[in-house]
Amino acid sequence: MGRYRNPDEYLLRYGYLSQLAEGYTSDDVARALISFQSFFRLSKTGEFGGETERVMDQARCAMPDDSDRGKAILTKCPQQTGGTPLKFAIIQGSASVPDDQAFAAIRAAVQTWSVPGQVPNGPTFQEVSPSSDPDIVIGWVQTDTDLGFTAGDYAHADFPPNCHASFTHPPPSPLHLNDRDFTWSVAPTPGDADVQSVVLHEFGHLLGMSHSSNPNSVMSPILLLGDQKLVLTDDDLQALLALYP
Image (cartoon, rainbow, N blue to C red; front, side):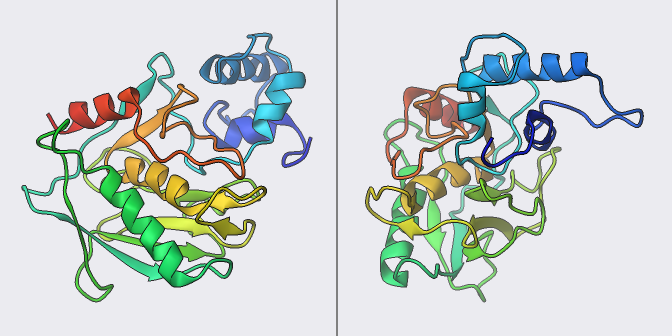
């Protein structure tokens, strides 16, 4: 296996297996594997190998997958903006892509979530300087202070600060992109992480969404290196509408 020495490490990190005081059994691992296989629409064998190993080896979001996996996409809670724009600031560029290109891709990703024709009460956004009291700060880092990036983690972003969920901060909420283990690009490039696609996904967490089991959704936790996802699917839009009715 490439990124993980055994499936237990993956299952523990991404929310499928709990580390109890007395440890866990082989039956616990088998049940966790079935849950993982169900979420990713694989054959539910409870065994490691084949397609299960291949999917676990793909680059993904650092946020764990939610425990309620019976739905295509889950919602936590919305940003409480009081009708004012959600303020974001870009604080740090990447070593592998010019700032003007990277920052333009970030702005395009953020604005993709503003769809007044389909979600009339959805959030709006305003870019501000880092010193102007932003709600969200976006930038590339060498390590994530919450989850400590693995080599396969593209990025991490929090749920809104008012959520009763793990990985929330008081404002400003972080969106951290992994500049240690990936090279980044703003066009489909084999082997590179796509800036706009990854920021689009992570911003969904900041708006209150968990991961989607629909592999075509922006909120699917996995994105193949070199691929892009730039358009919200119906699942993504329905989740946004549920959060901002």
